[in-house]
Amino acid sequence: MKGYKKLIILFFILMFPTAAFASGKAQLNLWKKDPFYYGRCGHCAELVSSVENKDRVDFFPYDNLNLRSGYFVADLTGPAGTSVTLYGSEDFRTNRGYLVIVKKDDSILEINDLEAFPADEWTDVENEKGTYSVFYHPHENFKSLVASLQWGKGPQSGTAN
Image (cartoon, rainbow, N blue to C red; front, side, top):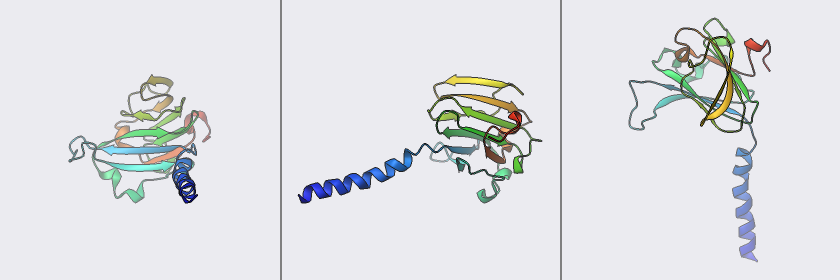
């Protein structure tokens, strides 16, 4: 009988973290990579992380991230339909470009070049890193300038939802 109690308690302890990860909440991880610094890890980069519906008007807590060399890459998790907009300026201003990303499947999405899309038109992308649509309003060196992010479809669609 004691063995069953321990087994049941262990089962519940192990289920709580799994339930937290299975909530379906979207998350965006922006990595600022520096091509001249990789360190021992081979993937050393500054990380900016945001969960769904937690917009960031700037990256102030990240210690002068905008002054560091390098460029951003993005990992986006969440269900199909998840959308996020990256801005080249703080406070969601569009004067330094923006990129709208809309997931079309549930896979983990990786974008290694935030400028690899045609200008000012919706583009569908299908690859092994996920299926998604993007709208890219370019600005010189946008991938290095990303300074704020907003969950939703952003300025191109005329709505933030």
